[in-house]
Image 1 (cartoon, rainbow, N blue to C red):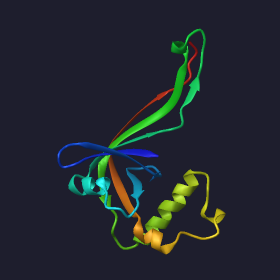
Image 2: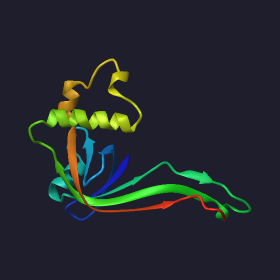
Image 3: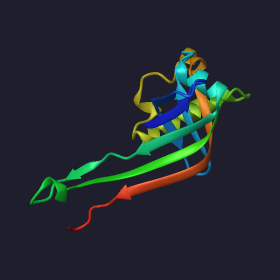
Length: 144
């Protein structure tokens, strides 16, 4: 899950959790449903966004106090410009997106009775993010 931040025309921040696909390089993809909500309205007005991603954190309790314990995590913050994909071949790109998403989630399309329904593919909105700045941090388990 990516937490994606935008800002509205008045400058108010808006953060929404979105599923994403990233395969290296400077492009990342997210999608929304067909609704014309805050996220879509905001990025049409201002395409600059911020994304936050993290892996599952693990708590390692250590004695004698909770302050000696550690939360193990990896986190990435990325800034970029987003655009709605609308070019020819969009259906194939959406299929690619969902195939990669299922792979990332350790699942596959063949696990299901039916493929992706055509009306659903048509209705979702696929976004491409051109990453400009990427930073990260992590906390690994260290002996205290």
